[in-house]
Amino acid sequence: MVADVDEIIRFLSSILALLIFTISIIAYHRERRKKLFLVSLAFFFYALKGFLKISDIFIPQKGDFIEIFANLLDFIILALFFMAIIMDK
Image (cartoon, rainbow, N blue to C red; front, side):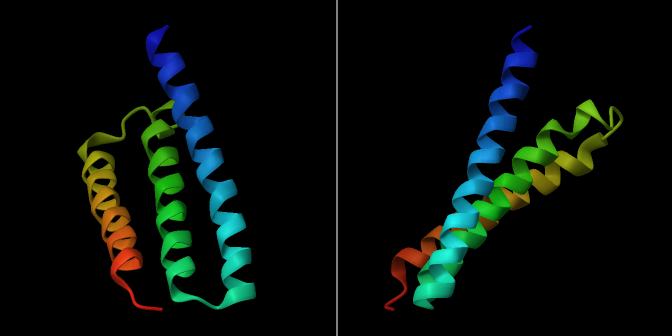
């Protein structure tokens, strides 16, 4: 029961991240600011990570590869937000 609620919340978070990605990529196309592009990529990778984590519904024998890749995506997401913060323009 708790695992089901966790997966539903993770799925909804991934959908929200995709929505924010879409909005921010539209804003990037209007403004052409690199910060928006980096933030857009971070939200895309966050959504990808969420979908990867709930992939055990469809692929039960996912193994350690998914967990390692999700941790790598965490690093990439944080690095993209960091670069967006420190970037001048």
